[in-house]
Image 1: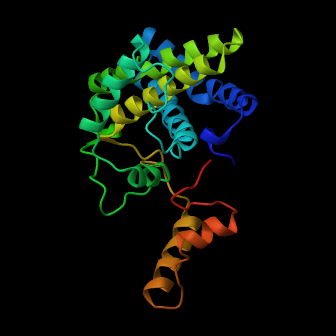
Image 2: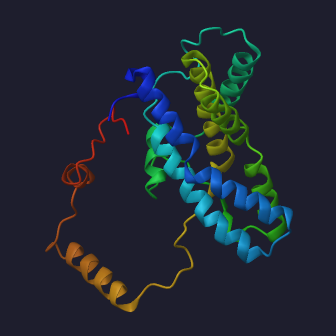
Image 3: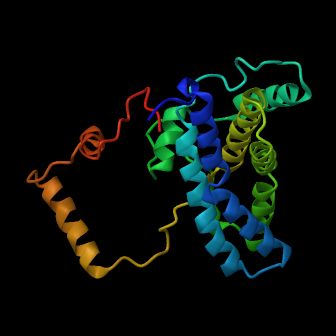
Length: 234
């Protein structure tokens, strides 16, 4: 697919319509409503399962936006631009992971070079879990989404939409940063079917015996028609 920076105004607007309607924003509303009603832990955990997956899905749209998101702003001295500059400086000063590490994390993989998260979400005490949820549902990305959706409704100029998109991008980075020190495996604690476990054990045994080989990730991507080169764009 075409890079964001290569899109014409019509294509760019179509992308923005897609982004503001991503499932993450619906999940956030449900999660915020559950928190407001002081819902049981089980309900919060069930919705966070969707929220986490939707966060990763949105990340795939952003990960190939290779330029500095503030580079090329029409007016870098507007209040919004100054705010984004402060936020980017905070992100870059506190982020522990590289782009490559974050891409693999979205696939459920930690590279050897990746600093492992220090906390497991499933092991958080209930009060700390709720505190984390309150933090993430009040992130700037959700305010930026509302602003961008309103501009699309108003048929705003490309320059206005461009600035609002950059705010959404930086907001996503802040959300990602807020979750960076937390490990979450949505399959953790789920019971594995016996037939799958037996097949997995068999395949591991075959590999260890040298009668089976692992398929390189690059070949899997190629077979699926996915370009995961350094310049890959969703």
